[in-house]
Length: 131
Image: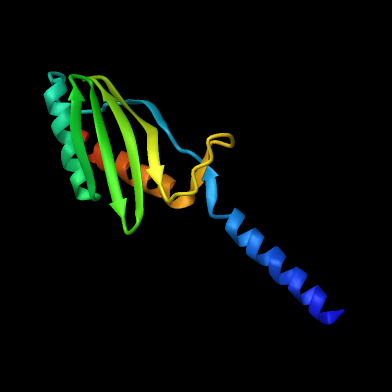
């Protein structure tokens, strides 16, 4: 009886810890751009996003005048986001991932993803404040 109880307790602990490692996907919608200059351009914003991304390990490539794709590779994990931008605001939206426990039905992902997005957002805000 002790062995069964101990086994059940350990199984419960494993499931509890695994469940804590996912959270609702963090998107950053319509983040206002606060810059020192009122004459910033799309190119200025894109360059600030590239600098910010590079400082956090993200590879940023431009898709069109108002869109970039950011890719972060960490060990065997990959996160890909779409970044929409203009001189007044930007947004970061989940695009895809590998090995991050993404669940489309529940809109959840490994909790490290949200930390990476928060770091990217903070770095972008810092770079934009220097314009």
